[in-house]
Image (tube, rainbow, N blue to C red; front, side, top):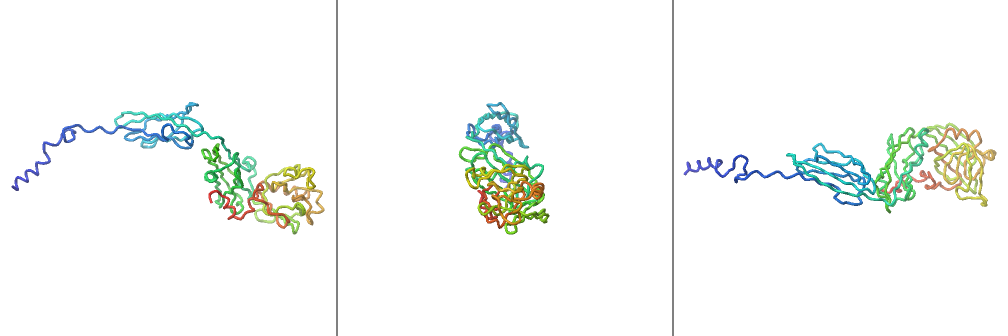
Length: 390
């Protein structure tokens, strides 16, 4: 019996039941490999597709051999990239709004057997498209740079309902790095400022990646935007209503002191940090621009020299020969900081957009945060609370 078992064990691997020459053990031929298949995303006939959503073609059991994506109205082609293993094609061009795209994809298996797949999608059609306007305009400060107090402002052409979604796509990168945050002044204006004044020499790269972003109420971002600002030397003026003097600091060093006259009791100058937003050697000052028009006892209209705006409600630093006798002793203006001719010209030649005028002891109220650049009126915690992401 032992001999018989041994013979049986040795002979079982060479039984007549196993196949030969590639058969499957039952006398049949080997099963064919699965055919190549193609999958396209977004799905066929999708509508309201976000134009930033990539078109992706994936091959299973084979490779992608060709993909053509065509804007059916314009006839233009969408470029894309193929993965190193040739199994995935991904569009790299963003799509247009309100457009239909025809997708024609081809693939093949290892033996060269080909397959094709077609699809068509349509992108969302916004009711309106919002642009991201920058303040100050980059072109206006390209040669001069901005001062250490300059906030970065995006002003959108339409109201923003989905503030958090939009804010996620906004960025300010500072070099050297400085902590900063966004604050929504209203539905159209969002400001960015650092915790403290910018460091002199800082480079700011400002971006709004808003194309395809849903602002709400049928509004979408019109286009992406990236700009660069440079921060020049630190210039900070400190105007004190108690001494009726203004001290000028350049990079932290006191370089000049000048007598001033600020707003009288009826029209006191706002206290707090003001940021210069505009300058002109000659300028017509008209109180009607902020609602005090002819017939009001506080109305005025005058031609002034060496003017620099520091708020949007009529506060400027400028020459005023009529108040020279009061400069250094009393406040007689409508809210401006008055200087004599020599000091006004010096101030004009040395300070500009983004530079700071800090007003104290004027008898006025705090400059409101909404008054163009009243950003520094808020503490850092108050400022951070104005972000839609907090």
